[in-house]
Image (cartoon, rainbow, N blue to C red):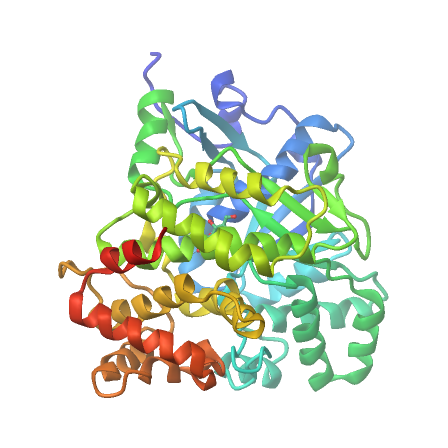
Length: 496
Ligand code: CS2
């Protein structure tokens, strides 16, 4: 019965063939030393992968991960992982078609904060927990682009301050758990952000301290002294799982995995070595520990993530559907490279050990991986919290230094068109998911009466509307785009 499909779970795992690379280590030895909030594809291709690698190579390592979901939408991953004893397959797709599969065993539990906040707080407050790590997306940091500060007017923030033992936001959970650790005389855990935000650790620190100060200034002081918030740069392109991925495992490997993860072979994690109470030896499986992550973060956010947004928005309007589809179009590949060379490279700092030219070459190759098929709908998801981190700071830096702004400005003009029409330039509907979708749409529609109306969404654009050099360039681009509905011709005129 070689064709019998096996469900992925602990009782089957030892029977899985070597080509699925199942974990050989004893998962019973693992302790939930890491509590991870936000178990999406990225966490499963990155931190959980590094930890699994370490567990495979070091018998004395007992660092396991307890996943946490805070939103009702996390119920699906919670039940699937539970059914599979928290095992899942990572499908690593190389550009030449080679596929490496790896059944990951580092996650050992999962809790739902919205159903049972107490269980999550207690897990974080448990003596076992040494690190609480986060992948809560750019939007999860709830920042106001105009001020760069946490938006305290958010209803969930207000709720958490009024109901500290029944929180909704991750910062509420962290504060309450730290309060209990302090009261119980337990050492603090490290709070480790794994999100694409510049200064992600510093920012998390500021917000957690803000929460604590509003509740108990003594607690805030204790956190300030005891809790470490290492900054980190995280990188691995991880598209949304498709039915074809599930089908592939069933057909080719007779494995029923309800939610595998696909990713590229490239993987990078640069972390500040600043931990409150120990950490896994991730450096032995490829993570880099450095004293200052800021230049690495900036390079990655401004080149890779912004590069994705440039292709995502321009490509979506033009009718492309995936990142590899964009870069196989010479115009888009050239435009992207010139954006990187002319507008980003001059505003970056030296990054030790990195040759920027080859970093950019590698990015283009990674984007071109034809087996990743990273959908532009994923890239454009929540653009309102991505562009203020990835792209707008580059425009601001170039405005300050008198540098070129045209490549990035066309993206903003195209984003206005995209938010207004919600279709590509041929009228095909686009799938748009954005917390500010309605507000952006309304502001974009008003462009016909007032060409600057889109920029009035200050939560996203900050004070960009005040800069005459920018608004002049932007208005001329928005007008041309609305007139011609042909973004490619505009791009063609700009590339050399
Ligand atoms: C992407 C990232 O969300 C995005 O727009 O740029 O998810 C990107 O794929 C990862 O940061 C790669 O490390």
